[in-house]
Image (cartoon, rainbow, N blue to C red; front, side, top):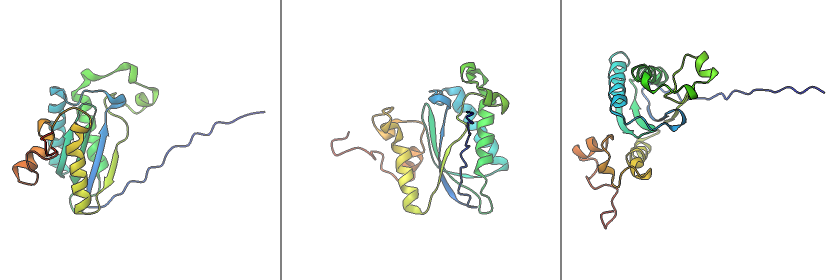
Length: 182
């Protein structure tokens, strides 16, 4: 009796809406806690600035954590191609941070695709439906450092768009604290 293994590849259907606003979660391979290293932050900023020169997008929200990031982007009215932007950003950071290459993470699949070992292959995206959905996701990403016990207060986490929103009056500086200041 012969048995055959069938490999089923997942077919992800991504929402592609020109001019859409999207929430993203991008994670490091095997949850490496490296994204807040100064060299990685510099490379990430440079990658984003470089990509935005030829493929503009607005960053509505951002939080950088040690092993993942959340971002909210709005694309131009005639453009729905967030995938190329993420590919270019991740590639740039991988090249700039070659010192983070981990041979133990370098699988045959990664080798065949000429991938590094910094990022997971995929990312999660969600097309935001309306202003309420945007606000919910902004709250989620700004609260994330507290959720992961990286900061006691939202305002204590330096790598977040929360500070920009406070400066514009959209959040109070003590947002997320209870009545006792915790």
